Length: 387
Ligand code: NZQ
Ligand code: ZN
Image 1 (tube, protein in one colour):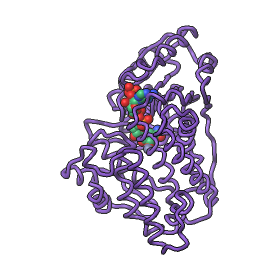
Image 2: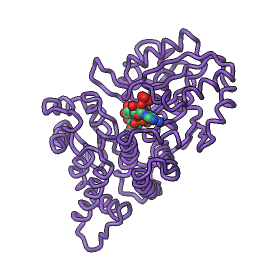
Image 3: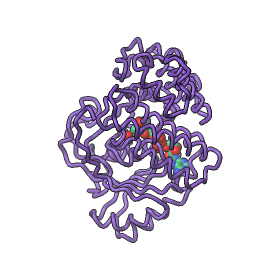
Image 4: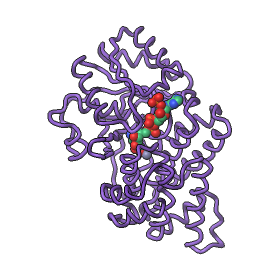
């Protein structure tokens, strides 16, 4: 393990079919008022909303609601939530939904008592959070982001055309998260695939960096194999509990810092996607899918040994008879085929991007990278290659 690290994850996970039974005892740890945050209606359709209200009522809580959180949650919704927390003195923010709802709940939790403009201070200037943080709990309904066990909060400022994410320290992580894989049965196929590829991408962003022999890379390879296997099973039968539970756990450990330990990490596919999302409002995982093949074809030469290893250990490519170049490309081809198998887009055009947007996206993307440091021109080339 090349880099020193401190590992601490404070989120308590309740996992499985009976996980929701633990909500009452968790609620007892907090005061009377709960801000219930949810999305555009799936929780009402599935009946989960009614169950939540019943549990909250039985626990004697005053319920304040913030409904309609959109995919790629907005700055405006976050500010509305912050106002509700302040006015009602909420003691707990309970997020019921996917990554967007949980990200928004975390954003509200740090913004409610922020002095000054939280967007500028926390998402642009990356200041440390120096105000009270209202605790967040989560009931997850869609697998993919890992937001249920991390400090990530990605918010879109629609006026400024910026989608910015930040990873906050453990005091911003959800205090507890309830993960029942059965809740994900109703996620539409495209969203399910998008979530699966989001997790896949998180693992790749962490994997494609470094040349040292690191246990974390072996862990990532194992999780990628499990995810691919279960994704195929869930595509065939969305109510395959074994597959859906594996996918859910892959998503959680794919971004709860375990799979990033002692790694340099890349994250440029995510940086590009965030700006693609700001311009097109596409589903996050679908955007990542459209960018990934072009990105990895652009950078593989700078870390070719890892790409050979990816082909061999993740996709079982027989690399012995191939040149490094051929083996690396075979792995990227497998990735590309998997994206097609998931039914996700392979081009930006399919997501509503126009040619005029490409330079704007390239200009506003945060520059970084793993094996290759990317500048604006590199990013524009990648965008053109997947347009
Ligand atoms: O709004 P509702 O009606 O609830 O519908 C949602 C939404 O339309 C639907 N859905 C969720 N659970 C469902 C369901 N539909 C039927 N049955 C269910 N059980 O799915 C749609 C997508 O939901 P959303 O929460 O937007 O998806 P996801 O979990 O992919 O979250 C995406 C957001 O997370 C950010 C992304 O950038 C994006 O803004 N990310 C957060 C990260 C983090 N916190 O660490 C890391 C990621 O890389 C990512 O950037
Ligand atoms: Zn992601």
